[in-house]
Image (cartoon, rainbow, N blue to C red; front, side, top):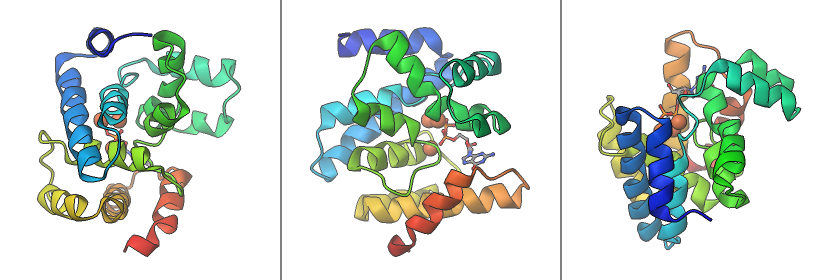
Length: 187
Ligand code: DGI
Ligand code: FE
Ligand code: FE
Ligand code: FE
């Protein structure tokens, strides 16, 4: 298995500097959220570091994996925003030889969430949203909510993302709506 520092080098090799720095900030943010929520910080670190590993692959590469691995063909209706997590986990298995399903699931679920999310899924989903480089309107509120309650953060992010997509007339991946409905109890 690769050491932590070898994984950092692998991520750096596959991403431009801006995206690489984001991954390092998500790693640190994930460690902080893990410590706040009594979760293993080392596992959170690896999942945070790797969450966007496949972000800069070509559409062609993603489509090839979806077809070769007979993944859900409905995925083909979407694009990089959805693929880099759900399909990106396959590059992490194949190239980095990481087979820990908890880490892979956290990568798969980091953009859209899921009706059921493990603590690690929640940590990576929220770390990606509130890492110190983020500066969208409402990010301070997102940080406050998330440090008070990780689960309330998950609902807040899902609601904000859905509103943003509708506002901008973007297509909604059905998984995004499923997450929003399932997390209503944290409203
Ligand atoms: O990869 P990052 O930029 O760090 O962040 P991300 O993986 O959380 O989100 C990537 C993009 O995905 C973001 O611009 C919002 C978008 N997105 C999230 N849910 C949906 C979506 N885009 C569409 N079209 N549909 C969705 O349901
Ligand atoms: Fe992402
Ligand atoms: Fe995200
Ligand atoms: Fe990210």
